[in-house]
Length: 259
Image (tube, rainbow, N blue to C red; front, side, top):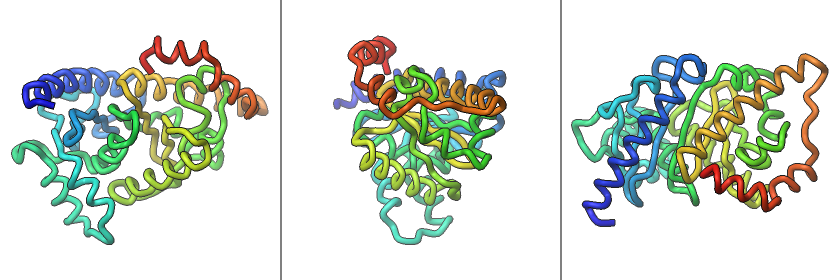
């Protein structure tokens, strides 16, 4: 990509990333408060944009977004036992502009997810409804099952489930491990990662895909909680999920919704 095209693409992506971030951070959505959550988008094969550490999704501004290089962060995943100081140094060294703010501590998992097939956008939040389940003994059920057809359409047949892991490099490695296990089981790419006692990550080729999977999982969590109070939930059967996932009309709807 030429420098001119890369700069234009970065400007477009930045504007859309700010809009996505502020939407996910709306106070009434109860998905992120203070410095919770983060978002990112790919610029090109070498670089991406990610929320700066300590900034708020609800008020995210251009100065709160950092352009980073993939290479040093992906290399960090392969290092044996880097110290916390070495991780911080790598985060700072990944910045394209040395004067920019420090990237989110979760920039490592953003870099890895954005390097995966079909992923140009990533969103991570801590929704109250979803965490009501992820902080309970039934957390894995929310990941392993589906409740409604549209949940399959927007979120796939299941979600990656990651047991509680220390945020930062350890979590990035756990997300990679869980994603690879998901691929081996389902023979497809996931769209949602659920983090026990932590929150949700959604990702895909568009910002719309991030929004859809985030909102649909939030809705599914609300239904789960309501159904649990009435003796449920009753999950879709595997054959029903496979049928919905393979329907041509649902594939058409996914394209129409820009998922």
